[in-house]
Image (cartoon, rainbow, N blue to C red; front, side):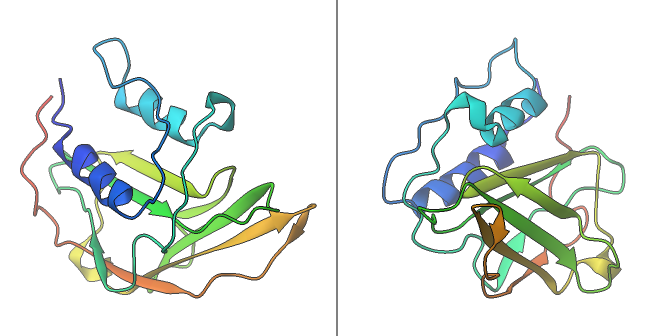
Length: 164
């Protein structure tokens, strides 16, 4: 079984900024892959609630996970923001300063999102000055974007191989 330590730590960081408990899917077991677990986190039909998030997570100045050149690790990023009671869903946008295409540009149905990329990595050349923003969609109309939040990605090969 893969090393899920980073997933656990990322979950704790997310939970530390939430004032209400999360209702989460069943724990990862031998019968479910990490990809399936993360799909449960972002699937509105599963009944997940993100809770009363009071801050934007990650905050400006945060350092997010990176992978390894040997592809023996995964990248796990999680985002959360204050809930808009009128929003049917949100648009989340994440891009690196030197990028022309965002790594995340999607609609999500809760005020949190987890992204898992197995075998991926971000080169040291591209690891600084990333940004993310989110906006509510109310009655089909996009609202105002949040303030842009800046973060960096940890240096390549910081984490040990995940194993497998």
